[in-house]
Length: 579
Ligand code: HEM
Image (cartoon, rainbow, N blue to C red):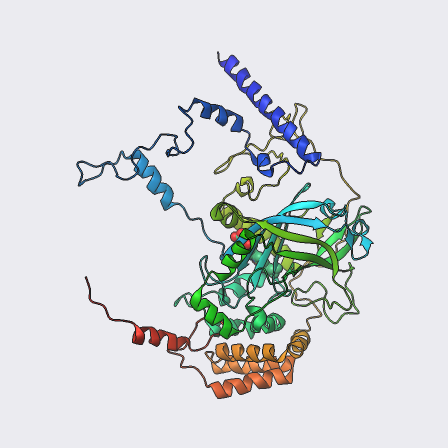
C-alpha cells in the first residue's frame, strides 16, 4: 500500500512537472501574451485545485476561515450567554485576531514610505547611435522594441511608513526588470549623487538623519554634527536643501542609479556605466513654503498623484539614458569616477538614450506588492556587472540581508519578487516555503548537484567570461582624489536665483537650531565651496539669530517656526469637557 501511494504521488508530481514544462516552453518561446502570474503558480496548485473540487458547492463568495471552514457568524464571538465571558476554543475568532495581530512586517529600515506601479521597459536596441550589443550582451537591451515587464517603487528615505510625502529627503526610484534571464534591480534615487562614499558610514549617516533616539524628532543639530565631519556630502547637501530636495511628486522627478556599474559585451569586454531616468512629464520641485502648504492639505499627495494618473490612463514615462566611460582610473579627471558623491559631467560623458519605461498598472494589493517588494543592487543579469565602487559593494550585501529579516528567508518566492521565468534551485525549506525550487523533469529526490539521477545541471555559458584583474594591498583607506568642495560650489553657481534663495533659507532655518561651533564649521565648509555660499549662510544666521535650544530643536529639515507650531497647537486648541 505504502509503495502504491508513493508511486501515485510521484505520478502526480510528474504530471505537474509536465504542465510546468509546457508553461516554461511557452514563456521561453517568447509568448508574451501569457499571463505572467501563471508562472508563479506553485507546484502544489494542481493538487489544491483538485482539493477545491471537493469543497461543497464551490461558492466563491462564501466567507471561510483559512482552514476552509465556512463562517456563518462573523458578527459575534462565541460566549457564555449574550454578555460573556468568552471561551478559549473560539477557533474562528482566535484565527482571525491572531492573524490580524501579525499583519505588519518590520518596515524598511530606510525608504519605508513608498508607492509602486507596474509597467514595461522598451529597448531602443541602441545606445545613442550605436548598436547596444557593442557594449552589453544583456538580452533585455537587444532587439529594438522588445518589452520587459517592470515593477517600480518610489519612496522617501528617512521617516516611517506613513510619514508625509512633502518632507525634504531624497526620493527612492527602484526598478525591478523581470527579464527573460531573470530579474535585474536598478535601485536608485532621484538625486544623482550621494552623501557618503564608503558603505561603512551608512549606518552613521542614517542614524544622524533619523529622529533623535531620545525625543524621536529629526534634529538639524545631529545632522550637521555629522555633516561637518563629512565634507564629501556637500554636493548632495546643496541639492537636498534646495528645491531639488522636495520633488513635486513621483511622476515629475528624475531617477539615477547613482553608483557605477559595468556593461559587458559578448567578447567579455567591459565599460563603466551610470544609469539615469529622465521623466517625459518634465521635472518639478517645490520650495519649502509650497511644500508646507501642500502638507497642510494632504500628506499622501505623491502616492495619490501616481495612483490617479495611472487609473485615468495618464501613464507616466521615463527615458533610460546611460553615461559611459572606459574602465580605468581616469587620471585626467580631478575626482575618482567611482566616487558616488560626484557627477560625471554630461559634456564629457553624454547621456545616451537606451530605452523608455511606461507605468500603466496600479498594484491590486499594496501590502503584497509594494510593502513586500524587495530590491537589491546585487540582482543583475548576464551582460551587466558591478564596478569596484565601494558603496555599491556594501549596498549589495545589505539589501538581501535586510530582506531575509524583513520579509523572510523565502522572500524571493513571493510573486512580486519572483522572476517571471522558470526557477530551479536546490534550495529547500525555511519559514513559509511555498514552492519547491525544482525544475520540470527534475527527479524530486535529488536536491543536490552533481548527480546522475536526474538532478539540475549547470547552465551553458552565454558569452566570454569577464575576468577583471584585481590586485592590491588589503587596506582601510579613503580614495585619493576627494575634491570635496569644487562641485558643490559649481552647483551653487548653476542654480537659478530662486533655487539659491530657497537653499540659503532652508540651510539657515535648520542651522539656526545648531550649536555655534557647528554653525561656524558649516559656514567655513560652504565658503570653501564658494565664498558667496558661505557668506550668505553666515549673514542669514546672523540676522535670524540662534534658536532657543530648549524649545526650537528639531522639526522637519528646512522648515521654520517649529516651536511656534507647538505653542500654537496649545493656544488655538478648543477646550472640551471630559465625558
Ligand atoms: C552603503 C550604502 C547603502 C546601504 C547600506 C543601503 C541600504 C539599504 C537598505 C537596508 C534598504 C532597505 C531595503 C529593504 O528593506 O527592502 C535600502 C533601501 C533603499 N535604498 Fe539603500 N542603501 C545604501 C545606499 C543607497 C544609495 C546610494 C541609494 C541610491 C542610489 C539607495 C537607494 C535605496 C532605495 C531606492 C531603497 C528602497 C528600495 C525599495 O523601494 O524597496 N541606497 N537601502
